[in-house]
Image 1 (cartoon, rainbow, N blue to C red):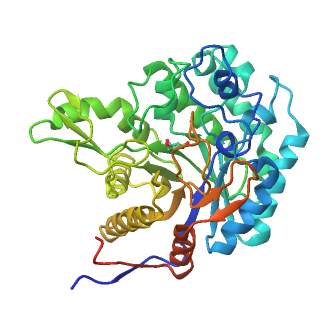
Image 2 (cartoon, rainbow, N blue to C red):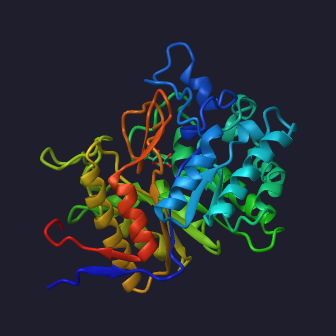
Length: 397
Ligand code: BGC
């Protein structure tokens, strides 16, 4: 008989994640807002008010704490903090300081992402990550947000999914199509590594901050005989960014699905495979692949699962998916990998880069009233977090 529950360590970080552009609403000074409203845009639906979390963050944070989580990952919006180059908005900084304070008030550990896909319009207009001084500008932005982080923020993610950013940089109008990224631009990849390192150097002036970056791990699985093809395909899309995290305080793993690599490269999911609302294969163990790859390529940097989740209308599948994912996380830990936390993506049904249709959230958001309603999965995962115990329903595995 398999054990009917798995136990996680007492200090495990349990939580969920969001990003500013996907939740705050009216992020009008960002490059994404500009893209959403550009004539002839390929973006299906604009972000608009999103979840109105810019005003309702207190409710979000209190709800997450009530549900039983101990950690909340959210991002700062550069376009609000530095709306014009060199002009730092004290009011915007104060806003994020209030978010950090709100977390502390209810006992949530804040994990702050400095850059989650969006940049100010001025930064995009001068070439974005292709501009020669892009890394320095990001380091200066990091300096500008130190007052927010100095309020007792222990965990800082510099750049979210640089492997996605490096791919997207050359293709300004492209909606991120799925969790396999196109071939990153090698120069932008290098610039992002530099930006990450410069930002970490700035962060190291604060005591007690642990910093790292968060990588889209894509679970490239070679068909027999295709190992070399998978390596060539996966290296610039994932491994390069993991290797760059050697010596960091942690590495963020973000996993959703797998991609089989055949003789001609990536293959679409099999016709008969279960798919999520993103069209991705339902494959909970992907997170285990990501954790192992991160641990190996960073030479043993502690891992945090900073994103993992499923877009589905059927909340029972969310519970099943997350059970499978947490089983894979636990398995990696029993192999000796130092995994320090698991953050579900996403706390809310939020703006999914072009559409509100793929619902990843633990908490539903009414699109008219913005009322928040936790789904059964939110109560279930909150309970797992509180108890540190995952009960396995052996009938569903
Ligand atoms: C991103 C999130 C996104 C999620 C689901 C990750 O790549 O960090 O912003 O919503 O995947 O597509």
